[in-house]
Amino acid sequence: MKKTGYDASEPGRLPDLLNVWSVKRLKEAGADAVKLLVYVDIDEDKAINDQKEAFVERVGSECVAEGLPLFLEIVSYDANNADSGSEEFAKVKAHKVNEAMKKYSEPRFNVDVLKVEVPVNMNFVEGFGEKALFTKEEAVQAFKEQAASTNLPYIYLSAGVSADLFQKTLYFAKEAGSTFNGVLCGRATWRGATDHFAEGDAAVQEWFRTEGKSNIESLNKVLDETATPIK
Image 1 (spheres, rainbow, N blue to C red):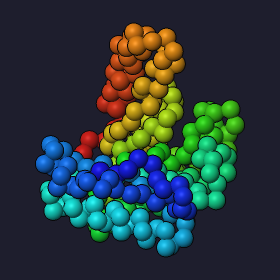
Image 2 (cartoon, helix red, strand yellow):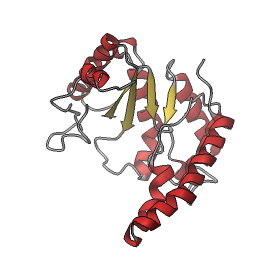
Image 3 (cartoon, rainbow, N blue to C red):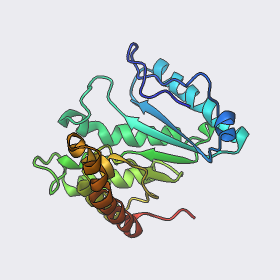
């Protein structure tokens, strides 16, 4: 339904929909739910954020009309800093993530489940990365504030980190008091397959049968021990 990425010709990372799709058509095609991605800098100009909010409102209203749940994926960014992996972005990430969650949890958007980032870049937390910008206590506080930012179920995306770091992050989130309800991720489980593309299809398929399968199985075990069931 939504076009991949965003319009790079204008500021604001504005989303757009595919011209021939609607929630009604997705339902007719057999969809059980709708997942919509929006890039959000909660501190960006109001004129830009108003457009995104109206965009989500439209899709949310269609979902209500068709009786389909809406999963809203929020990817945070800083309009003044394109490097989401930088130290500078790491220092503002908790604010960007948690405030965006708070905004899109408002009833007017008709969101059923939020798909979001963890509120800290764990590569900059003591004990996890080479350079510590945050103590473990500071990271714990960011997770607590995230849990308090919404009354909706929320699930984590992996943001392309390694399978090992993602699983360690989920354990940390649980210990910090996060009430996340699960994950919806890809790269943390399959990214390793790309290392074998040059070797041919057989090598890639073998990776999925072995390491890829192991990534999924171990992630499921971690979720059994960390995620909060939706009641």
